[in-house]
Image 1 (tube, rainbow, N blue to C red):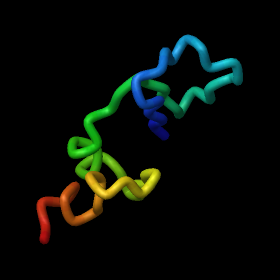
Image 2: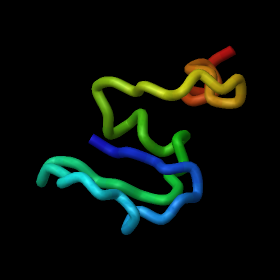
Image 3: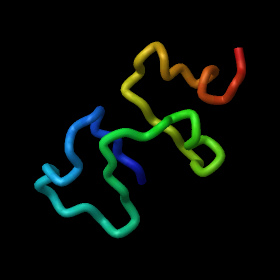
Length: 56
């Protein structure tokens, strides 16, 4: 699992992060699909699945 904090400091996370998770300030979402079985975003228009997968 990867969690992107929208520019916030990952060190500010106050919960325990599981070993299979990663918390980052920013993640270029267009690079995740080849490595992910599922991709969930907050639904911002610029992160439409078609754009992430280079499809119309």
